[in-house]
Length: 88
Image 1 (cartoon, rainbow, N blue to C red):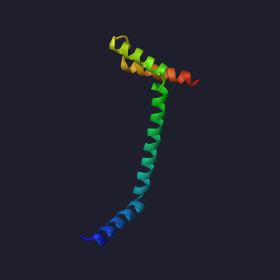
Image 2 (cartoon, rainbow, N blue to C red; image 1 turned 135 degrees about the vertical axis):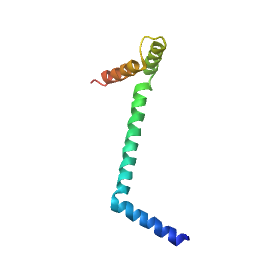
Image 3 (tube, rainbow, N blue to C red; image 1 turned 180 degrees about the horizontal axis):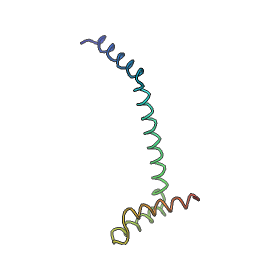
Image 4 (cartoon, rainbow, N blue to C red; image 1 turned 45 degrees about the vertical axis):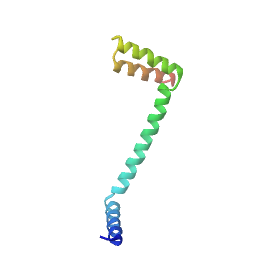
């Protein structure tokens, strides 16, 4: 097939996507994904981006490795300390 046929097929596909809402759904998923990535980035920086946070993480890693706590409990402690720092 030539270029005109390919362009016509692309237009039909675009028309189908518009008619069925597929294009809007994909756009909404992309926006949602972008928001999630931004939130994850900000949270990662808040939770691990300071010297105090790095020290807290090192202590928790040592606790898990020593058998004094679990990774789940360590994660809970990180989240709890973050919430208390935010004044919640």
